[in-house]
Amino acid sequence: MLTNLGSFADLEKVLGFSPPTTPNIDSAGLIKLFGQLPIIPNDFEISRGKSFLHDGVKITEISWNTGFGPRTQAYLLVPSNVDTPLPGALFLHSHDDVKEFGKEKVVDGVGDLPESAAWVKRDHYGNRGAANVLAKKGFAVLAFDCFMWGSRRFTLEDMPRRLGEILGEEDYEKLSVMHESMALAKYLSLFNTTLAGLLNFDDRVALEVAKTLPEISENIYALGLSGGGCRAIYLHATSPDLKGVVSVGAMATYESMVPTHIAPHSWMFFPQGLAAKSDWPGVATLNKTPLYIQFCGEDQLFTKAGMSDADAQLTTAFAKNGATYNSNTYPVGHSFTAEMQDSAFTWLSQIEGQNE
Image (cartoon, rainbow, N blue to C red; front, side):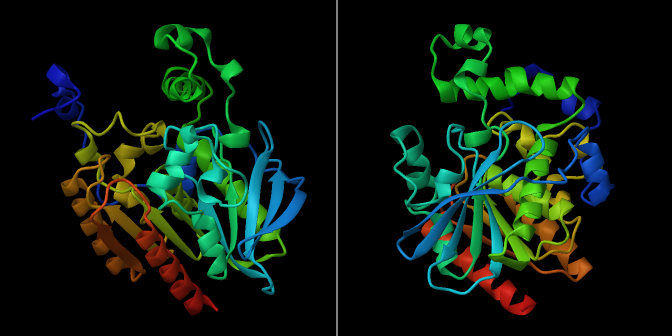
């Protein structure tokens, strides 16, 4: 069998790699496993910028103090001429190996993206502002940059000179890919923390910010594609006050990834020690919050068997817990197509109807 471990493929066996399908960890234990994390600020220092209308949606610029690094820049989208508060939705942007932009990948009406990033919206989001569409469905949508992206990114000047020497050019996005694994991962290990932990911290801060916004009701949801889907799973696991979560293109068993599907993924999927406590689907069962998983049937980042096995694990676990689980598989590559978005947004509306 083809494996990126080559002649060292026996490592999996000799090290006893066997992620448990039933998690040996709870929500608090997961946060502890993430390592050392910042303290959630007492004052988010929320600031509002300009508001403007775009195609029936009111968009407001918002920023806040996350507790470390640059301020988080965000957009709050609500349908125009509709009374608030509305159910809230945290829209967690995808990874895409595109870090110059984050929130803009899912929002229309905030300026054109250069082709280096425009392809993400075109190829991964059905060539539309998914957050705008969700807002028109009656949600107050908070789209924000997380650690490593957009306003929270590392700049070209931050990149170690050695990376440019190896790459032979100064392409920001290519350097950022190298930076995540060849520099940042080392810092995080040194500081006894994890990328998964810091991203989840950013997302939990955003959730707390959302709770303070007058446009958002007490019912808050989360959704995301790919890296955003991974973050959605972690937020589902660590934030039981969410009312529902949609994760797209981010689910398979760990074992299925081992042969050839580890390298394509971010470090966020693999915090040190997690696989000894739970298989990846198990992380999504740590809370009973309603969950909708969308699988991309032709996803190049996962195997079909790995996705199918994960779906079976989740179906069994949620049924045992008496919790709501829904899944669909679409005959597409790694993406969140317009059809998939429509299905996800309808599901969110249905869950919200049950929570009213």
